[in-house]
Amino acid sequence: MRFMYIVTSPQPHVGPTPELLGAMHKLADREIKAGRMLDNGGLMPVETGAQVRISDGKLSVIDGPFVEAKEIVGGYAIFELRDKEEAVAMAVEFMQLHKDFLPGWEGTCEVRAFAGP
Amino acid sequence: MPQADIDRTIQAVWRIEQPRLITGLSRMLRDVTLAEEFCQEALLAALEHWPTSGIPEKPGAWLMATAKHLALDHLRRAKMLARKHEMIARELEQEQAAMPDPDSGLDDDIGDELLRLIFTACHPLLSREARAALALRMICGLTTEEIARAFLVADATIAQRIVRAKRTLSESGLAYETPRGEQLSERLASVLEVVYLIFNEGYTAAGGEDWLRPQLCHEALRIGRVLVAIAPHEPEAHGLLALMELNASRMAARTDAAGEPILLPDQNRALWDRLQIRRGMLALARARELGGAGGFYALQAAIAACHAEAPTVEATDWPRIASLYAALARLVNSPVIELNRAVAVGMAEGPQAALEIVDRLAHEPALKKYHLLGSVRGDLLQKLGRHGEARAAFEAAAELAGNRREQNLLRRRANAAASAAMP
Image 1 (cartoon, rainbow over the protein chains, first blue to last red):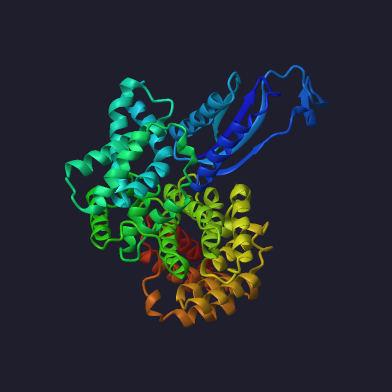
Image 2: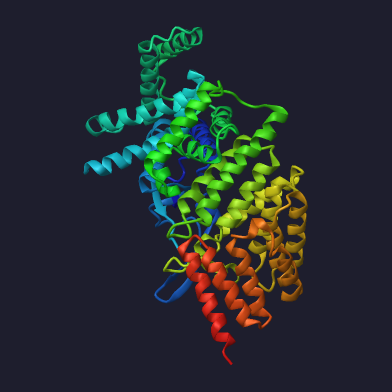
């Protein structure tokens, strides 16, 4: 099964410490060598992006930053894993690194299965 | 949480840690088969303790420490007096003294050890079936039951296969060695063969009810990805990964809702997996950069790439596919490859040219029981308007097909040919 991991945080300006970056690179390296991680990427700050939105039947383009946004997506990863339990175990390990190396940070790692055929 | 859910969670955590566990243990024990056993025992210990204690914050460190303890106990209890074992026991004790070191887990570079593990599990001394079972067990962490289910054989058969294979390795002193240099490429062929065998068993099941068994494809792909990560300079490893990614990209389009096969010309190409195609093309490009464009797997991947890149059947570069099959036939003399070339020639030049190739193959002993010969022949005859002969060819092919879904497909085609034959 393929899973998408989406990391969001209400503190988008708290960047990763070098220690966290190092630990995440090691985890990514292990997961590539274990043949489980297919793709991943971090996202630039919202100022660099935009939202194209439909509301009340009207289409509008809003440039970042978005003042009303509570949770900002910071990055994603795609894994090929056997089941949801494995996917959750992976997310727990990933978030444990944040707990260890980025004290005070708060955020969410959402795990979602890809739609099958 | 019900017990079954807790067990599933624990098993999932264990599987995530399994590659690091087994490689760490095999480095210490200098024996990959023994390492695999303690890896399993650590899982049993977790299943016993975690339901009451909760899953530890650093499950990997817990599993590793437990496995080390178990290994040490085993060596002590068995009073293994051989110097090798004394030395290992001493090393283990020293490491044990330095334990626990919960954060060191991620620092281990498991690459070399994983390579050793794969080469040992796929040792050419073992039968292909034994290599496949050991690879799924040691590299993918599958249980005996899961492997048995995947290959549609009895649990006891797989258990026995694994025990025998491990004994063979131990008795031949091959339980811990890594080929280097020229030997590596040679041994790699044995590994790639097994990975491809596992993939194909999942991709076109030779027998049974289901035509596709995706889990086997996923496991083979996983080993393929491991291989290119830890042996990045081997072009054929990239070639095989490219072939598997590109073929697997079509999985969702290959069967209908009822599980019946849909052949390539009839597939909905919108269902092809773009991420997998991209990964396949990258792996193929890497194989070519490394000078491996003419390799056995890279050539087949190049053929799969022609399909992956084509928006429609008609827009497919059939002449190129035909020439790739010709190159493949020069590499390995196989009537099956010649049959595939005939299909491509049929698309490039028309059914008559293809039928001439197929008819030359009719008396090949290797194809006597090969249902796809009749299937291809029926298809060509159908296109030439020779419906009566087409029907006979499809019917004969259905008799030979081992998989029920394929039989159904061929019978449907025979019926369609019969209807077309009516005036």
